[in-house]
Length: 61
Image 1 (tube, helix red, strand yellow):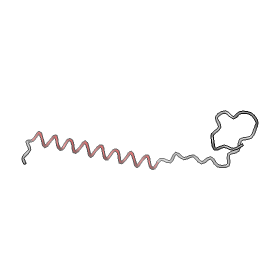
Image 2: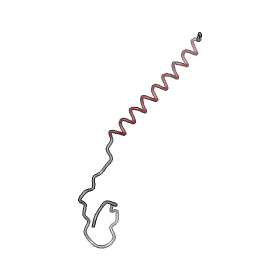
Image 3: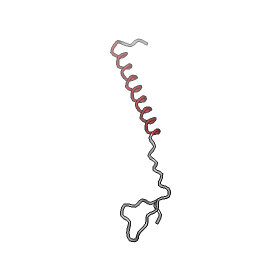
Image 4: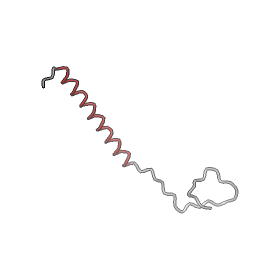
């Protein structure tokens, strides 16, 4: 099977685009997994009477 010069260039360009896309997605996935967005909210006490504006669900009175 013989390819002319343009077909070979097109095939190499498509392979290059696929490799770049896969590499960037793997790098992005690694960065997302390293990121830690958990916030520990232990031993939070809120005192007072009335309505609390902006309190979170894990707080205790």
